[in-house]
Amino acid sequence: TQTVSQSDAHVTVFEGDSVELRCNYSYGGSIYLSWYIQHHGRGLQFLLKYYSGNPVVQGVNGFEAEFSKSDSSFHLRKASVHWSDSAVYFCAVSAWGAGNKLTFGIGTRVLVRP
Amino acid sequence: GGIITQTPKFLIGQEGQKLTLKCQQNFNHDTMYWYRQDSGKGLRLIYYSITENDLQKGDLSEGYDASREKKSSFSLTVTSAQKNEMAVFLCASSIIQGAIAEQFFGPGTRLTVL
Image (cartoon, rainbow over all chains, first blue to last red; front, side):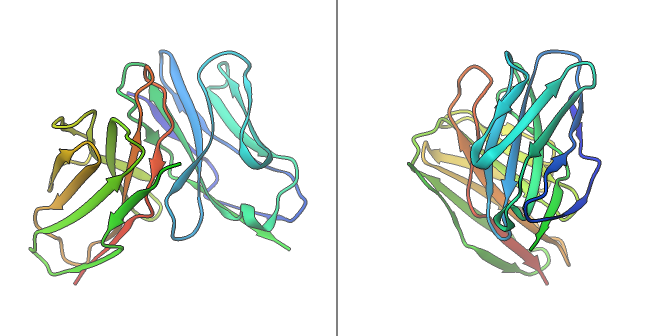
């Protein structure tokens, strides 16, 4: 069984700052990792994914994430945040062959201040 | 592009009542999902359906029934609403590409039980 941990429940940054959201997982086999964003009152939207190849993956709106097998991590980063990045961010994992079942972390709420 | 529609947007029920939530997608996706989202707990999978007429239990299926009437629609029934229950139910869909496919989410149905 795969598990995913997001250690920061809340993060507050100023517009133009960089941000890193942490995600750690546990699973012994091949794994698929992704990040989703949820703006207030809306459904989740896909940001990016990783399953093989270059460990740094680019997503929409300037987001990128880096996979580390040694650290069992898939941290999300953005170099310069905008007020519209205020949202809840979910890390999700899926084991190969699990029928695309995703296990989500509890989410990190990001507040971008002007 | 496509869209996922969830009805109703808000659902108020009474304790012990049977309540049905509906989801429609026009992506022509094979797989559909129902998640429950509670504050501070992330998303938990209730039921999913890999294709029309298929039904698979998720981690939180007890107390729920589901029905995949046709490829484009997936319904969820709360068999007996619990007093003071409050949660958001999110429907999602995806195609199957091996075990890797992003999920597309609807806006959610917000349930309140009096």
